[in-house]
Length: 184
Image 1: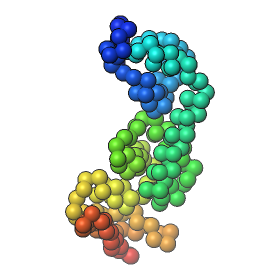
Image 2 (image 1 turned 45 degrees about the horizontal axis):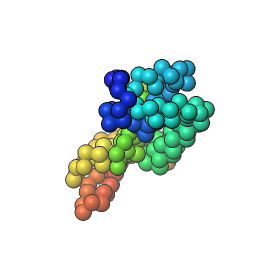
Image 3 (image 1 turned 180 degrees about the horizontal axis):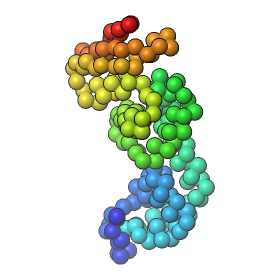
Image 4 (image 1 turned 90 degrees about the horizontal axis):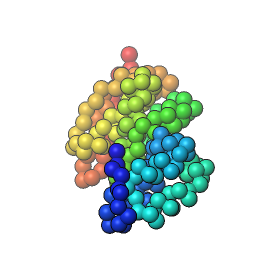
């Protein structure tokens, strides 16, 4: 928890308006507390008087709308990275993603890949269908390996599940992939 700042000195502030706004947009529980009692949430934060005033002037409905827009943008980026997972059942995956999105909020230059990897892991942990080749590809990309060999017992080819070996390699910052499948 952020410690309350009892000083009115702007230099003593531990947190600023932008940081709090970011937290409000990415944390639905904090947003709900803010909706129920904005004064209590703002009072718990070490803010300057100016930042406190700006936060209290926020329109909660617009804040919630903006949070939904950000999650929808994340969803679309993740769908581009793991299309086969979403093709299995778009409605189920969208519903799962919307529930998952509030539990993990990525940041950094590769945030969309980490978001997709984390979502696939979420699906795997909850025993919900995901494309194993896509998870392997993400694992390979995130670990920055030069070579990877994965067993995939769920490669779908022409509507049938096949066992396959998935070979991934990296050469001069480009990633390549080849899958050998067994038809028996």
